[in-house]
Image (cartoon, helix red, strand yellow):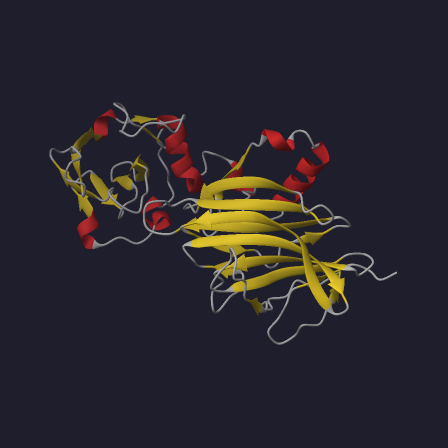
Length: 331
């Protein structure tokens, strides 16, 4: 019997490999398709069936010139196609669309995939074009190689201070997966092994740990994640760790100070305070965006700061530092 196999096509090497394929960084061959997938189409994965009479290909449109696994068009499409082998020719017998992504870059994980007897699992990451959306959207696919029926488990989040380059978010519940428990379990097991997802360990699991100060602030001030304005009474937490250093670099015009406090506003990001008397750091506001939320700060009294915004239509806020409610006592 001829065993089924996976091919990651390469410009330099088109040799076929077995199901135990090593996950290489080879770049796939480029194909042309005059139908849905115009301009440039790359074959990303390729499989033979058990009796070597059919071949299945997963292809992506608008592949980057430098990396076939990075789809960089305004509209990116993933297609699965099944061909019948006939005297050296490949006859298309079935085709389906796995993904259509408008105004997003699409990254296909070339290293994290899994071939089972009748299924193939792989992952994509969509990152929006432009400045309006900081989100990162992961999709974990499970494709039936006989029927081309597929299932998707989604995970949504963004890169945060604590997660670095990993995606900090959550899985999106999909009731359609509940009807097939085995498929659902396979998808979650595969997804949880993804290098893209932030998986905290050790102290990072403690919400009170300083690396989680953003999440702690939101939990205390906006647990539902629905507020667009600062709460009337801000809740915060004291930290002995240097939150200025953890949050990142800032310029001279991004901080103010007096005898009691030093306050830093990060570009389109958090406002953090330091109590010089207690020698402790505390977040004042926690937010991030790519447009519209840069802030200027100034003292209007010894204990009050005014926050004004780059969006001139947004009214300035005044925060009394003495009225912040702290969830812990000074050390």
